[in-house]
Length: 391
Image (cartoon, rainbow, N blue to C red; front, side, top):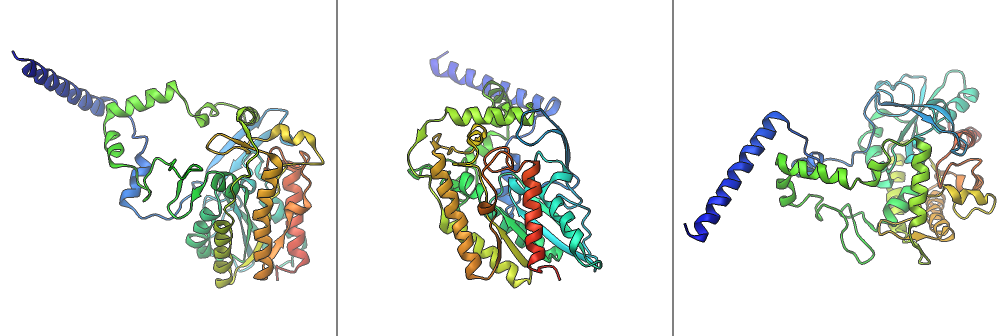
């Protein structure tokens, strides 16, 4: 037998063995494709979808020590996947319907339903509105959402639900998850400072074809899951930790990254373009809009302990930015909001200017603790009532 004949025989035997193994795995013990959700992008044109499923619920026990948050926390969604009371698709005549749109600051992931900023706003408004008006405030936010996600939610869903008012609070994610990642709003990919693409997708948002095909096989999927066990991602490491321990781990990871004196990148043009879109959509539909600036604890002069709970100062490239420079970057976005609000006669509640940078109100960089949500909710409700925004 020649060398080539032996090689061909061996390759044939290997292919047959792999085929038998693949068939047996598919038949007896199949595992899911880790990229199944992303493959749908090839076949469907979908709007940016970022939302909780209807009736989602979770209960967490907060370990003592997280600033201003403790005890058992119930986090639930209503029939539409929003935080708040049941939402009737046919709006009752007495209801004044408000959607508070944003990201994790609005979401209040580790605050109980009764402590959420949206619940506080609803309760405060209910105390002073005319007896024939029933204000309902629904939280429409998910961690990681930014202004582009909010546009999609408002345009594709909320305008169909007869809102009387939209309160919009975001900016932190547009800085940390968008600007610091050199996010490409034109193609929905991320790039490093040199413009090199960081996403696993190509410029059209699709995964390369060979990668698609590779994960059509059970054997390849098992190799993937085996590797995940050997080298778990940061999010997987956090899965079984308490909320307090999650933040402590995140703080340590942030501190371990090298500090840079470079100014963090700020994509003010994309942010204000998106904000202008939200202003235009709400005005075209006759919906009142209340803008809220993003408050942080970065570069605090009133609470030196705040820096010990910061974990959002790093970029995907692995560098950590100075707090004074991050504070300036956030104020750049807030100033963009202030200027557009003044130019287009939109109501603006300047929370960033009013709320102290203290662990009395936050448990980390940007997220409200119980007192912070209470204070912000009461302040926004008072602002709405004093300006007679509810008829």
